[in-house]
Length: 122
Image (cartoon, rainbow, N blue to C red; front, top):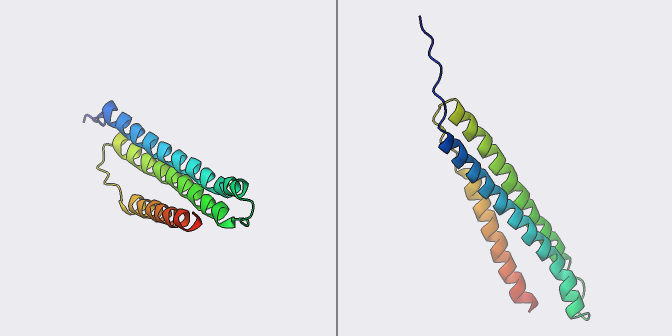
């Protein structure tokens, strides 16, 4: 009886999976940088107009955006790992869409809060 080895995975698919991971990483880094800018916005506004009091909301909201960036990194890494394992094992893997949809809604909500915050302080 001849035992057949599993077929080799297509390298193009593995590389596409890696490119997807890199897109998640770029998005997470962008969110973290934006969160840092938002948290420092209070300092810049205080320097611009010292008569206004401190704005602790900017610091907390910036931290929330940074946390979204960290969540983006983690979600991308988990999805990469499951997809890579499925590709190597020659299995069909249909990723769940709840994580990316929840992250997209959270980022959209953060954008709406940013817009309202900027409208209120100006």
